[in-house]
Image (cartoon, rainbow, N blue to C red; front, top):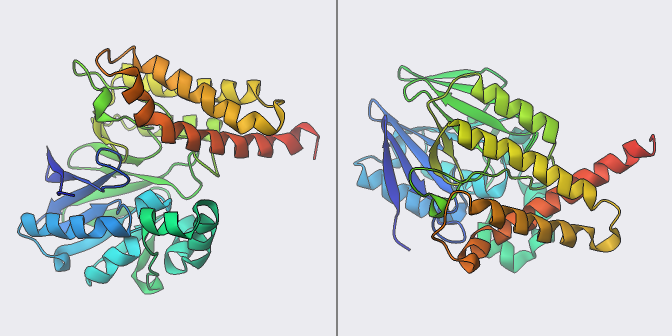
Length: 321
């Protein structure tokens, strides 16, 4: 596949991670005083595209000073170890809850492989490479890095994952949001408007924490959000309202299905898919029904899995355990 990249201003380039297919996952390259910072890494299969992008910008892997996955889900951090092997001067900056797994990825790899099977795991993610602990910086809430006068501020943002932070960039006044500000695929854009919805993938989804994290980001009055899935969107009132509406809708779908027995997760998945497709028409009237379903089918499935885990956590509380 070809290298796909898009300059976004403020010395920020959005690079396609080529995860599953183009237009799904972003990697961001920040350049400052001839040095580089990479936010998100995609998978091990994404690393050649990152190195090619550096070369295309007249830079080398030796110019990379920081590699920053917003959290350790493998579409965000699966390539971190492989990338760090090519970047001898780089430090990995990661949430404290994710640091151990970056240095010791065996459990993370085994757990993911148990879900997908080894063949599919290799196809999607390749191999997870450990990172030496001395090369890892653990970024607590409000930790700051001075990247040659460009301040990167890290904010603890649970709700999607307990090992998730977002990154405020002082130069662009934008936030690299990982999965906290949801998903917005460019295929749905129409007339300058975006379609945005939440991601509730396993295993840490917490709707109250997620809404609090969204508000925490909005309180900083960012000019735009740099999403991992996918690229940059504005912090318009419409986008904010869509995102929060989706969180509430997904919770209501899950709660309505909580007594549905062994078919609960499948029922949730079907209803999520129907809701997402129906809502997308409020923004975009040009895509076919089949294309809409193709784009969001995987998200509906993963969101249903996360909501199933969330419901299971609620059940002991309901019994007073």
